[in-house]
Image 1: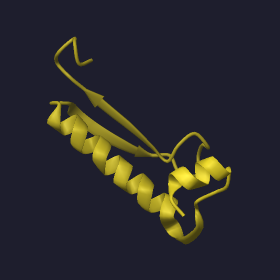
Image 2 (image 1 turned 120 degrees about the vertical axis):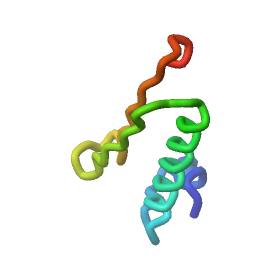
Image 3 (image 1 turned 60 degrees about the vertical axis):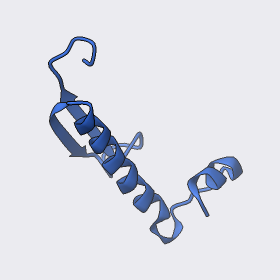
Image 4 (image 1 turned 30 degrees about the vertical axis):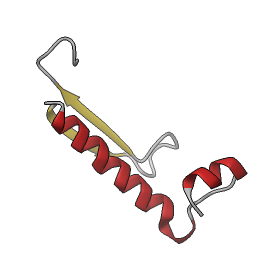
Length: 68
């Protein structure tokens, strides 16, 4: 079952580790995008088990006012 189908059917896609795999893929994509857009000091904070709003918090800084 994919994430979109689970959201549409209002059920959890956590079976077989699919959600965990998706979260890691999304995290990698976010970090790659930040790097490509010249973000600095990219930090990933693992918040799994501490809150229900997400699994990771990504914090970055930049030098351009447009990008910050």
